[in-house]
Length: 74
Image 1: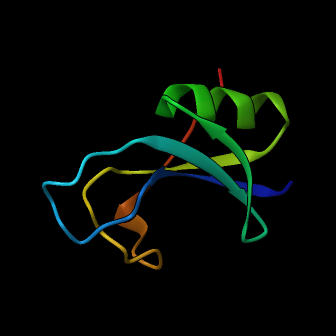
Image 2: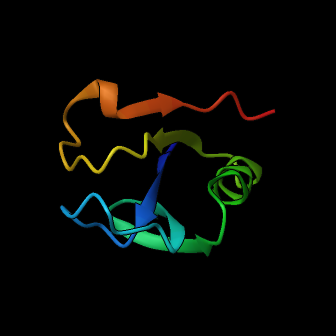
């Protein structure tokens, strides 16, 4: 099964900068955009992806497993 990653946008190192939307990334390509994280997560689940959701902590270290939580897709 293909992995999908839900991330916030825009990415910024400025911690006072807010989140405007969320994207679903599959194979390093943004394939969907949503206003809310839960909407992006539900969309990816409905497409059958194994979904990983970024914790919104203004961190750019994707290799760190603590940066992601796995969706239970219910």
